[in-house]
Image (tube, rainbow, N blue to C red; front, side, top):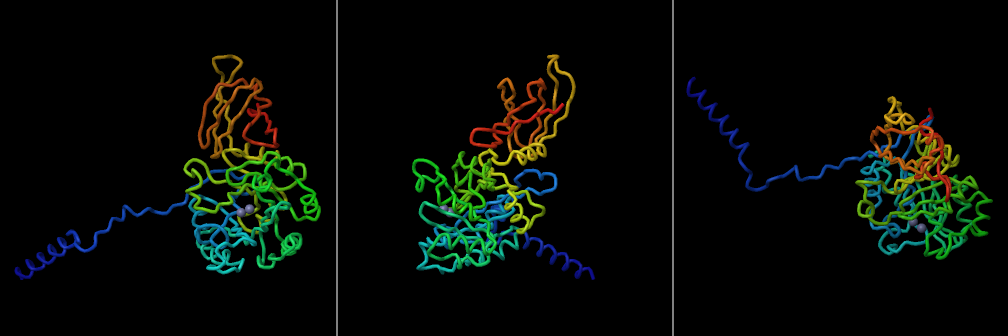
Length: 366
Ligand SMILES: [Zn+2]
Ligand SMILES: [Zn+2]
């Protein structure tokens, strides 16, 4: 009995020491494996709508991009986006010799990954022509192949027949409009036929202020897209700012709701801490972002102490009627002594309502 017990003890000890000994064939360092995790882009919902962070313009190896379609989904997930459209060029496929010319392929390859990661993937293509009309993205397509026709108006008419939302891309791209950013007679004609529904105000790292005026005056939807061809984290400083994003105010998080919101013009264009678009939406976003509390009197009897909580990643730059600048950093709380009289008509200088105008509001509303 005793010897049996000793033997069991020896067996346990032997097993224990074998478990802790270093394996001489294969040593793993799991702590060196980067864990893939999703970032959060903090932008609040507005009353009645969810705020979706979207990029409707990007390329893969199926046109002149350098990545496989599933990688666009992974990038979007990591960065904290809700929806993307892969928009490979219909008329420009430099790798066609090696990679299928089917224009639906990038969507079909990326789709299962999008389902797995909860990213809304929109079937799309980029109609790629010389100026005019230049490049246009058709979103929410059924069959991209049917847009591969010679006449550009026929291609866009086919897109509309499929229910597409059509965006005029990078109108101020200097390769196509070297001197000025022009709305040409052909754009007017397409617009009148309902073949331009929105325009990129931001593309890649560019801003076209004049285009913001076009959108406001013609009630066109403002769009901000990356047009990424390379790897997104190599192209932007994502640790501090997201890629260009279209904020879509949708009734719910779904492809159909995004489409409805885009046709209704319920978007804002965000890039480099500037938000551009309709005044009413900018005001809703500012109101949803800030919680302002009156704390009491300040030393100066004309001033009061306020606590301002910014529930958004966007840093608001407020210019009061005296021209003083108040910075409200993203996702932060500040306490400031302010004279409310000077903030009745505050200019929020990074919330843009036109090429030369910004949102004006009574910041302290008391
Ligand atoms: Zn383009
Ligand atoms: Zn493009």
